[in-house]
Length: 488
Image (cartoon, rainbow, N blue to C red; front, side, top):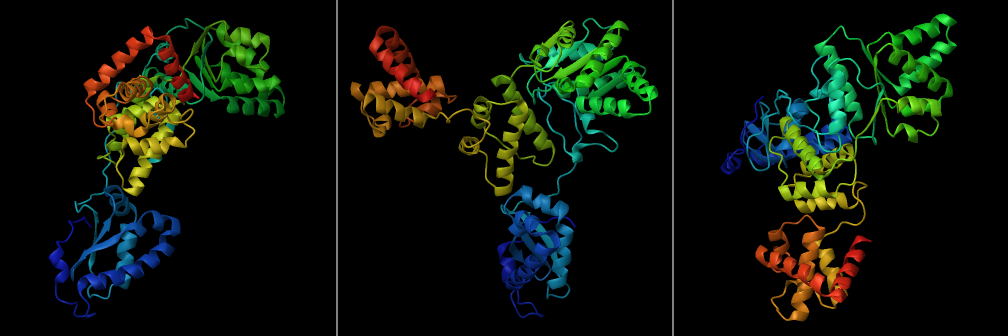
């Protein structure tokens, strides 16, 4: 059934129902109480509490009852997954004959439609780390690894060499460097690139034999071959790795923990390199840092090309956020809005991998969707304040003001007052200067936090303090003291 608009308020004052003798709205409230009890059993307490339990009767006539959810997202979710159950139980308990139709709306009253699938389009610039893919995003028969492509990988200063090398390997050209090792912390996008290479090779040259295997699969297959029936099993294992044009091994550092597997890996590398076949290995550290690896294996891994994927910088993290927002809008939350200052703060304060950045983003968006609250700079700060994603205590303008007040013996009221005495104005300028230097706040935003001052006042304060620091050693030492306290 389609979802209709909220019924206007005067519909609730229609004649009493002939069957129950109650006004339609009162009758609907009574019925809804019974339906709610049944829903807790039918859907489970947790599902009911999170979704259908948040519905309320907003209007009713003798033909239609409208149940209102606090947000459009919740209303759409209920319409998509739980509407049939709600309507079935409503018909069971409704004392009106015939039972009234049930419609759903958001609290604001706008009609809500179930989210429609949106065709996925490749973007030329996407995150450096893979963005996780839910099952609903996959086409029929499509593997999750097929979603990791070169098109949805953002290139930044920290990964541009790795990206260029991966594209070169995927072109199926003769090996220029062999073996190639990609290394970097977990969550930086190594596996994304491996899957992208595999998919591209299969699409562009099906005759090019490519094998992608994880360290766990490598070790498991090797152990099984050793325990198998004689030489035949071992030869079959070796053949599966060496009768290829491109061998890709993920998380190879784990293979070094097993002496036998490590030795077999080395023999495989030597054999393929001698045949001119390409080898690509991913690890979480430089080959020299793999503690249990033999010196011979380390030397061989370093003999080709060792390529590091470094930490994402601020600009790359900001682009990842933009892509995450675009994807969430395309997958059911078309009205998702995150103000720029909140995006800037999230990108600036993250001290983690792109994968962790996605985790923080999901936490922030989920809170907004479930609670029906807008995403603001303050909600982002609150979400990150107790998380593992940021390093140290969150640095805010308020903290800077308090630190300056303690150093210069003034009050917080002085920071926002109109007083222009030098004993007050100079510490205020220092706090403005440090706010500009140590936070990502804009000049107008900083000015507002100092009694609604104009951004030009902040600019003047910054220039004045910079000048005084060069002229007065004692004054410069005071500011250094405040900075040191804030960084602890």
